Length: 334
Length: 131
Image (tube, rainbow over all chains, first blue to last red; front, side, top):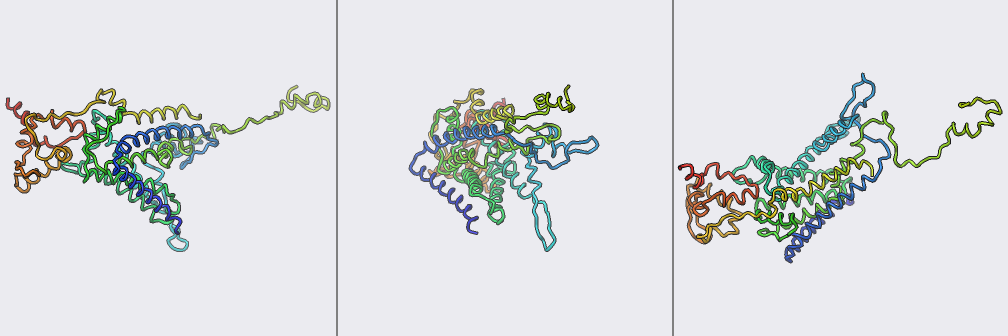
């Protein structure tokens, strides 16, 4: 189908156009735009947009008590309940959410349904998505953490230790960090997973490909800088420190690849609050994940419920007391 | 707002993480710090041009190591045709005598843990040990 291939080509085209925009702006020589104005604007947009989106969520009520559960609810003492998959206490919720955030536990339940032959439906566990997601997210986290050496002075020992651990298989010069390789492989997998399988392609939107391609652009430009187009790191850090104390200067000793890397990172940061990347704060605010399964113990009041004017029996009896007495009918309250 | 007691601290934590470099560098008092490696006053040039050395000295030293250890070639012809002995101790440290005032300046700034000193002794440290 041509329609589900449009997403791939549109997002690929967008990323290529953005690449040419950054090369063009660099060619004109507007370094202060690429190196100061856009990063600052992206950061402001990121923080303001992030807060706005989360506060908007916080303002939305949860009308129903809707935790998704995969285990036995706590009921009678002699029935064994599952405290994590059907959490009864806050501790259970925190455990379940932490396992979800750190280890993507629900992706392990991903199943592949296959009709092998007639009347032979197979359900098979499919852990490739889990593996790709784990490799990608953890690599991204470690890469972000390694970049703290540009932002912090003195550099904390833990950042240096992570950097050392990440380049442990290498000699005098860390040519490529383990996480660099992992993130490129996992991004390639996550991209081609969407492209190759026609079912997943049908479900994918241009923005799904776009985020992956943007991240790939960042990773590839970063690796290229590490391998071939070296930047003068000390001067890069001097520039970052200037940005942090709001006395921006232009980065010195850097080339086009640095500016492409920076432009793509700025785009990703600015795009963050208006994209699916908001799953980062969103996971904490998911009612299906952050509620305890106590719907039989506590009444969940829907904040949307409009105040209903009720007329109770007591009030009714009061209203017609004399008439009821007259015909000799029994009264609750004499 | 619903669940403000949990969401507001979460957002404050988010702001704290995003602005952490500002607090870290302000508390450490090093927000204005720029490393100043001490350059020998009487020497005019390095083995290769400064811009190249600043970025690629590690590759140069790695190449020298390979050349000396694997091929036994100990002389290096620089881009300006000058001949140097491939030696960290005898060539580089001949000019840059104080490791703490030269190498460590930028290496500490960038959090680089280099392996040079696993094998090489620094002339000054050697002298101190002999005394």
